[in-house]
Length: 339
Image: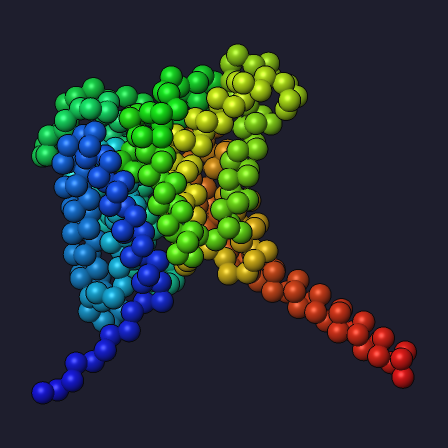
């Protein structure tokens, strides 16, 4: 019998597989609050990504590659950043956009922008009321058709208007709040983040600067109606702590910091570049969260920052080369003096 050829896996196969595994408990938490609709949305997105890959892969001269699950990973991330009440056509459209963005630049390993972020932003701009309106936890949503239940705005809308949401800390930790499928249960998110960190899927050089600025900027410049326009950082501590709680535990900041910004293709390679990249993402996330009417601040920030990783790596490489040359010149000068 002829031997079967061994198919080599994609270099990032393990990363995408871990992200897909981590998406399962988040979908499970959403099912607890809304019924089985999130599971069907999840499966629909995966099937759409698979069919798109089968249709577009021949453009590169190859067939569908089962060892390269990036499209399915992006589809899962899109569902996790959308409400459980979202319609199936919108999910399908967002996934198609994500796969097209990936394939337009040459397929896996070549795209400059995070495909899932592009899919969510395009869907959010096209259907903002559907993408950024959320059902009340405990509402059993129908499996098919449009959802006619009451939908509410996300908590970022309250924060953007200078107010504080009323959700308790326990509800934020357990996901008993109106939010996207995978962004509400902070405890589950942090457990998944710890798993990804242990597995080496999260780069501290990117994540630490990102969260440092996501937390520091609202503390220094709080947007709260009950505070004066200008106040010192050590004043109104209680109000600032409450504000930070909602910024970190609600919306997409925590989810984006753990699941999106360390994507291996769009993230820079050099240590200093990663620090600058994470810093830029943190600053831009704060700007979009404060001034944008959309809930996907991290996705918007990724679209802007996605244009600079290679440039950052180039500058870092040149800087290291200049430093090495100077150190080498100094070493040779010292050796000449010794002789």
